[in-house]
Length: 259
Image (tube, rainbow, N blue to C red; front, side, top):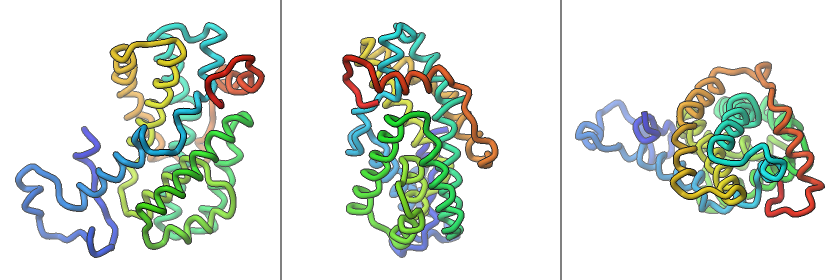
């Protein structure tokens, strides 16, 4: 099922208010105004062109390529599948879901605890730099262009560094965009950035890169579904070698990426 077919906005902002009356466009197979707005924002915020600086980071993939663990499309796919389902991809998705729910419930004390845990839940200094820098950029740009009532209160409640998944969670919540498509779009963006880094490092052609993205589609959907129902107690990583890669990247002699 596509993101477009599952989107809905629940905000009470007049422009995007939902009603119980069927929308004529929806009955014709199109999208209602609120669905179109949600899709537009998610596609914008989680597009490679959204200026959060994601292109500058490889999440340790650069070291894995130099070490010979990633050599082609198949090994890149396997490495990313593990990171997605058993590593930082799943954990970040859980943090997104938990911060989204806390923000929607205006549980600001809970939101602060989740934000603090997420900021501490990274294996290396470079990954910390990566996720906090992207989180700060995501907040600043989305607030400047798409500010919404309540977002400032959510940001203040975090009371510290806001990592990337927390930023996506609270911005999506402040706009009333449903959690499920927000999770799916976020994971698609993360995987796309990983593939882009791998394509430049191995290197891979555009067709092979798209094949890797297509192969990971079921894993993205399954990880989003798991994160949607997971609790903070379910957090955990089994990608020890990928975590070591992010640590060893700090002292890599020649580098194209910051992580």
